[in-house]
Image (cartoon, rainbow, N blue to C red; front, side, top):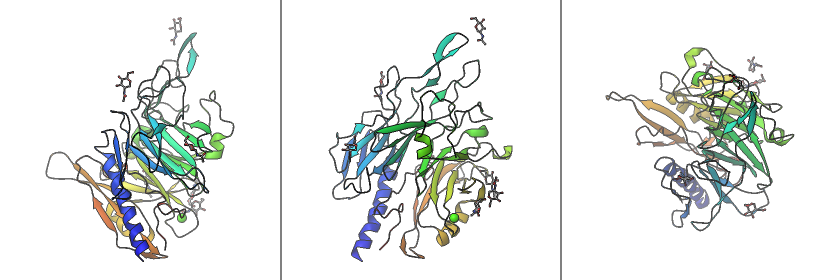
Length: 388
Ligand SMILES: *[C@@H]1O[C@H](CO)[C@@H](O)[C@H](O)[C@H]1NC(C)=O
Ligand SMILES: *[C@@H]1O[C@H](CO)[C@@H](O)[C@H](O)[C@H]1NC(C)=O
Ligand SMILES: *[C@@H]1O[C@H](CO)[C@@H](O)[C@H](O)[C@H]1NC(C)=O
Ligand SMILES: *[C@@H]1O[C@H](CO)[C@@H](O)[C@H](O)[C@H]1NC(C)=O
Ligand SMILES: *[C@@H]1O[C@H](CO)[C@@H](O)[C@H](O)[C@H]1NC(C)=O
Ligand SMILES: *[C@@H]1O[C@H](CO)[C@@H](O)[C@H](O)[C@H]1NC(C)=O
Ligand SMILES: [Ca+2]
C-alpha cells in the first residue's frame, strides 16, 4: 500500500523534474528531483543547453546500476573543425555534479564529396543540435541532431536540414548513423526540411520511431526502423542508405502543410489488441489548435486524429499514461500557447486513477509538445506504468 503510493509520487516528481529542465533548461545545470530529499545535480558546459533532453540508461537487464543520459545540443565536441555539434553525456546516478562524460557517438568531421572536379563538404555538422533528443530501450540508445544539414544530391550545393540520428548498443561499443530523410527527395516539398530526430521513441520490442516534423512543406513525417537492421551492414560511405524494413508515413493533401506531424512521438497499445500504436503530436494541425495522430505501427497509416478534449475522454478509457498539447486563443492578438499533461496511473488491470492534469503556464512554451519520457520508473518493462 505505502509502497504504491511512494512509487506514484516518484513518477510525478520525475515528470515535474523533467518539465523543469525543458524551458529555462538553458542554464547548463540539470537538477534531478527523483527523490526530493536527495536531489542529484549535474553540471554541463555553460551555454551548452545541458539538460535539454534526458533519459535513464541501464547497460543490460542484469546490471544493477542505472545512469542518466543528458543531451546538451550546443556543446562543443572533439570533432575536428566543427563548432557546437551537440553531445549526449553519460552521468552515473547518483553522482557528483561534474561526473558526466560525453558519449562518443560520432568523432568524425564532415564527409567530403567530389562535385564537378572539386572536393566540397557533403554535410554540415556544426550547430546540428545533436542531443536535442535522446531515448533508451534496454541498453539501446538513440540520440539525434535534427538540424544536421547535407548538401543534397543536386549539382548546385544546397543545405537541407534533413536531421540525423545515431544509435549505440552493447554499452556504447557499437554505433551507427540513421538519417531517414537524407534521400533523393530534397527541398521543402520532399524530405529536405524533415529535421528527422526532432522527436524519437522506441516500441516495446525496441523498434526505433523517429519524428521529422518538416517533411512535405512541414506536414511532417514519422518513420520506423529496426536497430539490428540499422547496425547490420552499416557503412560511413553509404550516404543514401535505405534500411531494410523501414516504414514511413506519406505526404497528405496540401491542406496538411505546416502542421508538424512528428513534433513529438510516443508508443503504446490503445486499441485492445496485441499491436502497439504510434502516437504523434501534430501541434500546428487543425488551424493551430493541434491534435494527436494515432498511427498503425504495422503499415504506418492513420487510425484516428484526436483533438485535446477528444483525446482526454478517449484516454480515460484506454490509456495508462499520455500527454496532450493544444493552443488557447486569448483576447490578445497573439495566441498564447499552453498545454497539459494528463497522467493516468494503472493501479490494477482495467483500473485507472483519476487523471492528474498539469497545465503549463509558460507562454509559447509549447507545454507538452517536447515532453521527455516517463521512463520505466519501476523497471517492470512498461514505460511509466505502475503495477502492484
Ligand atoms: C564552442 O567553441 C567556440 C569556439 O571554438 C566558442 O565560441 C563557443 O562559445 C563554444 N560553445 C560552447 C557552448 O562551449
Ligand atoms: C563545373 O566546373 C566548370 C569548370 O570549373 C564550370 O565552368 C561549371 O560552371 C561547373 N558547373 C557547375 C554546375 O557548377
Ligand atoms: C558502460 O559504459 C559506461 C560509460 O562508458 C561505463 O562507465 C560503464 O562502466 C559501462 N558499464 C558496463 C556494465 O560495462
Ligand atoms: C493495422 O494494420 C494492419 C495491417 O494492415 C491490420 O492488420 C491491423 O488490423 C491494423 N490495426 C488497426 C488498429 O487498425
Ligand atoms: C494499412 O492497414 C489498414 C488497416 O488494416 C488498411 O485499411 C490499409 O489499406 C493498409 N494500408 C496499406 C498501404 O497497406
Ligand atoms: C490525420 O492527420 C493526417 C495528417 O497529420 C492525415 O494525413 C490523415 O488523413 C488524418 N486522418 C484522419 C483519419 O483524419
Ligand atoms: Ca493496438
